[in-house]
Image 1: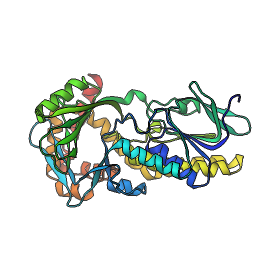
Image 2: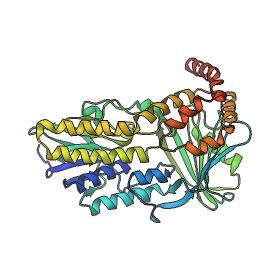
Image 3: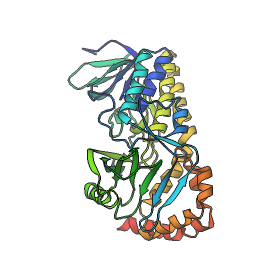
Image 4: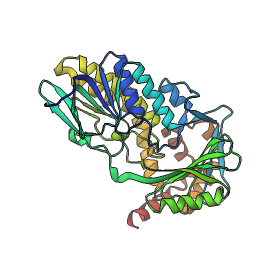
Length: 399
């Protein structure tokens, strides 16, 4: 271990939501924590649409702050491929629009205030295990960092799980995405807008997120078309007089979680573990809460006897799955079926949904979507469409 930096209890790779939550919890538990971020500045570049449920923030123990909040949201409008949109809303706010860069920075500041050592502009290239039950990471053009536990929260595309003997998510299920920050738009309200159809975002959807009275964050993801042309066409259709203030490209992961999220001296959390909603690619709440659990487990493992560390690591895997796995399975099924639907089938599904708005408004949950998915599939209007859905799915496989 030549040129190894001082020993730490926990090394966390990635200062996004999952990484900051993991580092914060481990530090609060009394561990010496090093948090490594590859970019020069935490939160940059930002690829997130920035919609977070208020219940999700509560689950993470975070109160909305002016430092990162942009707008409260009461509901959503869903635009089918053809026809009028349907609206789902509640009297009280259900979500908040955040500035993702400022949100990540807020969490990082909390971690540093709790004693975490943050080091930016540090790209980790390799995970390794060492004698005496230690593990660490190698930094490109830098030293090795050694500790008792490593938590990988470095996001989509991470190679560290494979180096630790684990699977990785199916990175072929990363959909290309593009997002514009629009200004000079028409008057914005308190709803998110979602757009569907083969001419808008084939196999996925497009979105418009209000960030101000006359500004919006508009984007889409799709694995079946030119995302720039699709997005430009969408802007021309709905916001022809707006101005593009900023452009951000990225990707949306829809593969689902890996089968095992721990090995000796190693935990993986967040996008690197596939802990995202397959229906939307959103991972702030699931990844953040799983990161929190990972930080607690890693701290206990680092303090415990060597031959009992595995118990704490396995407990982390069990706990996050107990919280989210059932919903993720149903979201994964919905995602696989939805991706191959024709515009005609989508229109009919929207017609069926329009007949169930009160129930959807009552029980729908942004973060735990499994319940509403299961409930709607048992409805007569939706059950009658299952043969069409199956036919579309089969056709998509062979097309």
